[in-house]
Image (cartoon, rainbow, N blue to C red; front, side):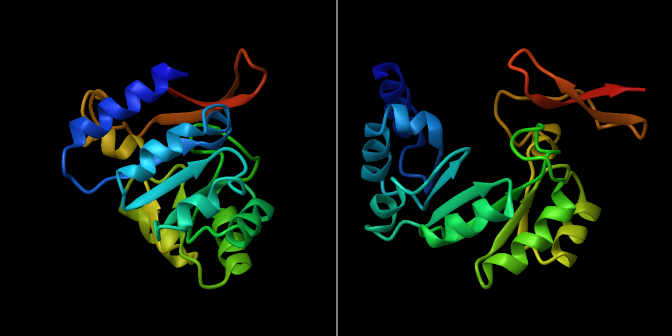
Length: 188
């Protein structure tokens, strides 16, 4: 696990004095909880936790006043995250790489918005343009988190996707080696 700590320290050093947020996969952070101390020492603008329980980390993150962003895949996870101290909820539908739950983004978002009251909800999964943003906002989201859309337009260093997604682009589900379904894309 020291490799993870060295990697994180190297990334934080490379960021210099830039204001940053730091994200962790919660189940991986459970295996190496000292990484959270490294992150908190940097005084990030926010900590983003996904794919697992946040309960054991939330008090440590909230104590210095750092906003906690929790990514969830179900309404039950959203309400639990808010009860544990999350100040922002990222509602992730299955279109976001096919990770997590079984509910699509646009049915999930309004259900989460209704469940968490005044906590801002950020929609993610399958949102790649202004129409998706508009739809998410109409469903009550405070904003969206886009992955591939940013990569397509050169916003992610070292990650490029060739061209713009064609109109005949199709995303479906594929069962992977670990037995879980993941989103896959192909031109049809």
